[in-house]
Length: 98
Length: 198
Image (tube, rainbow over all chains, first blue to last red):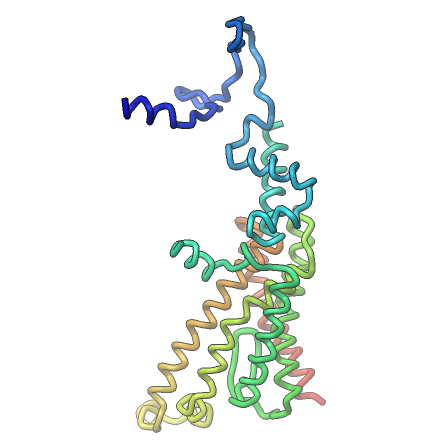
């Protein structure tokens, strides 16, 4: 019972790489939770979905703060250049992914 | 918590930069200049300190300004060339002057009597005679303690460059060496020209 509860609490992350050969994974199947309709095919993952959880949260916070690095720095409790560096590194990563 | 605190001692610029760092750094520079004036220890270069013949207060102020502005200017110009980020001058100036705060402790140590005596000792005498000079050994030990704070400043200057210019790898290493060692040589000529040629 306790084990089952623990399993429910585990946050499952979207795997981005093949565990066997490390190649990037694509979407093959999707289904509707409401009516069980399944869609099969090969779909590319959206670029933002290829970022880590932390990076995705940064993008969300950035949009929520209307793109203000100063507000971001204040809410994250870090200095302005630190936030700018995180953003610039993220831009570099997105350019590489694209 | 402790780990975060320790990281803050190694790299404070993740939390403080820009105008805030500049104001703290300038306040520290005023204290440091006053301590240098009372102890009589001059900044000969960025990495060289000791007694010098010009006792005027403005000479100490010029030395402190040169030791701050020269490496900051080199970091900024290098950052404009090597960094892909849009760097701000206030971040470079602020972090570099903040990085020199540990030098206050070094200047405080220079006020102590053994350091004052060490400054008056003629280092050209034979080693055996040198060791018998009163306060020499204590002075050497205090110099070693002061060296720790100089190294701390150098670590913070590295972090200042890394954070304010967003550099990594070999670009960071090259620009740091140019800023510190090139800055050391430039500071020497500029301090000599401004304080001892007029």
